[in-house]
Image (cartoon, one colour):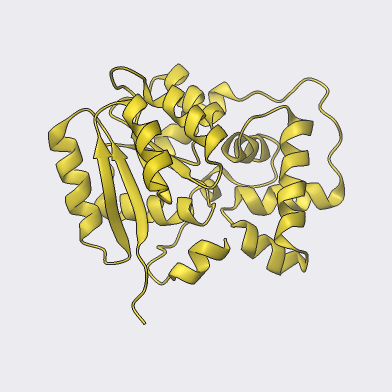
Length: 232
């Protein structure tokens, strides 16, 4: 039986960039570009219409910017993950994308393998952030004043989340259900007063739970199967 490819929507207002992204992703038979658009408003519409697994989202676009589009997609379509793309690291834009719910953050000059790995990581709920963006996030995410104390199990889940593990992997390692993992993650976000898994992961680094280098999955996901994507 043929493997079903991971479905990707590209949103970028530059035709050359879209062509390059499509070409890079097209070299991997586990990835299929199902649509592309030039602005954030259309990205939201197409995400609803096409239900992609991952949206590659340029942050600076006309009509609606990528940060606003990411927030709308994540609110309406929580199963669709967003990887933010930018040509420059503006602190407000980086933080805005993370708060909006982007699970990945890459510069447009990223290597082809890094781009494909970021898309695959996003599909299984793994955080994938470029080292340059991590340094910006570290300067923007501050330790919340008086956050609620995390339980031992919540701390364990946060540590695994920050190390790039998907819900399925966390559930397997802790011998609990995936829905229970999702509940833990929800509690963690609420207690820390953050809006996304990526923000929580940065907090884990600042708290000394994990080294900064572990925010980006170190190994390629070439062997990831479609069954793993759907069950993540």
